[in-house]
Structure formats: structure tokens, C-alpha cells
Picture 1: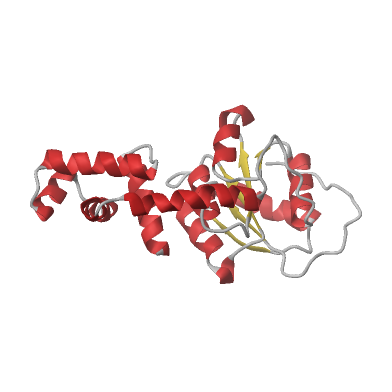
Picture 2: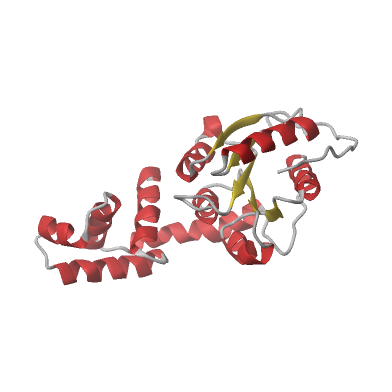
Length: 227
């Protein structure tokens, strides 16, 4: 990632502003820190991580919550859209900007639905820095019909109520799925048949709005940590 200094007259900086980065490429994290030191030296980068789960945990904890999080869509483990959704479901206090080295069309809708405020091209560092600067100074430059943080939070926070739709048995099953147990192992633990357990899993996936057993397990585990 190459970057250029963009000269501008900076407005007064509000106290307590900060940034954080999440990207599975360590060289990108180094480049982002260098870029921000050059264009926004007055805004501290309080942390960076290659781990999506750590990005979520840091963003939800008041002591480590940044004003703005720049997150790569194509991360290993917990992908960028899941990072954004997990944060936005629980708070409107973090500005979420997604970035990608791929075509913006590939991720635009996914980024919107996950509660992000923009999707940025990693190669277009001039636009990236201008958008970050605008958001960090409170200008809220909504791009491509993305939602503002509060509107996205209002929409996605309602999704958390889906966990209350699970029956007691479905909750037991999802607790065990989150521990990495197989359907066969869960059946033995709960004294049920394996087909019955798989039925409970299918119902839980549908109720949680997940795309797979793994996706449902991640969503369930994150919600249990917050409850």
C-alpha cells in the first residue's frame, strides 16, 4: 500500500478522538499507521490487530473503544462484515469504515448490510484519507447510500432479539456447538438422536438469521459473551 500526503487546513480536533485498524496483513497495518501519522498526526491509533474477534472485543470495551475502526473485508477467521455487524449490533459509538483490495462491487452490499459507513478501495489512499478525515472530524460524509452509525445500529440491534426466539433445547444445542461439539457428540450429551439434534441446529440457524452452523455458532458465542 502506497500513500500520499494530502495537504489541508485541519479544523479543531475534538478531544478523545482515536482510530484503530483490523487487517490480516501485518504490512498493511504498518502502512496504515504510517499513513495516518502523515495525514492525521493529532489522532492516535490506539490499537491494530490481525484478529477479527479481538477487533470486536476491543471496539465493545469502553477502555479500548476507538472513534473510528478501519477494517478489511477479506480477513481470515472472522471476516470484516461479521466484525462490523458484531460491533454495530451493540453500539453506534464506533464509525466503521470497510476497505478491500478487490472490486468495490464485490463487497458494497455486504458492507452496507453489516452496518459500515463506507467501503473504501485500499489502492485509493487519497480518497481513504479524505473520508477518514471527514468522519473523524464529524462531517459524516455518507457515501453510496450507506447508513449513519445510529441508523445502522437501530436496524441491526433489533436482530439481537433473535436469540430470545430459541427454545431451551436449541440454546443447549447452540452452547455445545459453540464449544466445537459435533452433532453426534451433542446427541450423546443430551440423550437425543443425532437427527433430532440436527433439526434443532437447523431451527437455530434459521431463527438467528445465520448462513451456516459455523456462522450461527459464532453469532451465538458472541451474544453469550455480551449477555
